[in-house]
Length: 289
Length: 243
Image 1: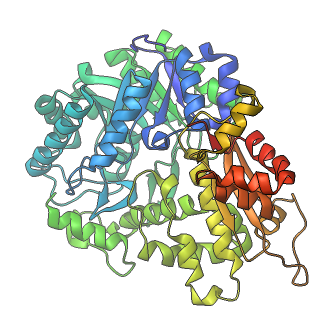
Image 2: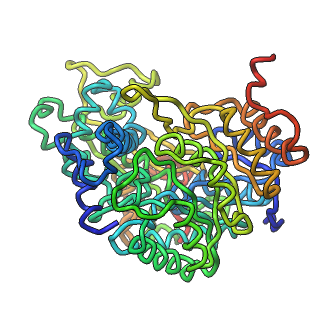
């Protein structure tokens, strides 16, 4: 099993359809990330593929359904299965979202927004600590893509994350696409957000595509992971690299999957920018082909 | 966020007529449209999970009908786990009791078959009983003991031509007609990493059913030595676990 520490480099959200291409040349990327819940089954092809890839590549396990922001008690079976995945594959990174995704025993299948205030902070902190104790490790918490702000909020998202890190010693997964989407949709400056983040806590970056949806006289950005990383997100990535330096950087492309070569080219862009963040952003490259 | 606010937000996700405007910041006059993004995401993720798990059922019903059926099913049987590949265990029984589809009794069996495939795909790995490891004496001895099905195995005995109905939707067989509508048995399992779905004759069904009971298999083969070939096929298919 690859035990290389992850301090930089670029990887992809692994999809089984890309298994053969990836296995043919694992060194094409630096790590893979999988959604934890997809590996909650006991055996079969998915586990066989992951075990094989894990021999060659570092791994990030990314949870999407633990509902850290929810008010139901944390699902004990879910947590047990997450622990089982982590024990089986010994990932370098484990992450979850600042969101809620379940309520009254139902799984809602989306990452829903939280009000940022002291009461929420206290609840989320206790749950993050519970997860970290169950897994015996620190986890990274991802900033969400949001479409509205809740009236109960009385602090900024970045301040909430700062305090969460302080209270729980957790790390952060900085999703630059989410940051861009949220700032566009709900106001705020990506520049200010980046500068206010505790950079030393950021253990991974996410890069993804988004789409635009008309709403009244304006536009909402929708975090749909259905395309190439947007120009603005690459620009924000350069800004981050100049500010804080490389982190393991993941290309998230979860819908309308591209050919492996297209995905690998996105990885190349992230890698190239880590080497030289002064070059023009990669995005828009297809316009020049 | 108070538990009450979260509860209101949650209820509005499931109720098209409810928008929790008071939860939003007053500056956002388009709160309803923003809220609809979340509502649509919740509905779409659940519907898509069912569509991915039950593709042949979706094909037989047509996309629009399947979406409408999923909408009412989800109301009564929302997912309980974030592992959405485990969602839909109740769908077959729901369809069986769904009055508008009562004339199409085979649809529930299609759902059972597709659920079995989902279970088989994710089932635990287990060492299989292999002929390569034993001589005739060892095999004879083994057959006096109960056998265990591989964790991936589901046997479906349908009143409908279940295999052909399923296979014809993928161009693997011809569709049955009203004049040619026999009952069919289907075996779903994983042979190694390969998901298998095969029609099963009556002898194989009987052998599988007898296999889990002490001495019954050996007795059946003593009475019907011609069944040995059937048993060898089941062994070759790796449907028995070694322990």
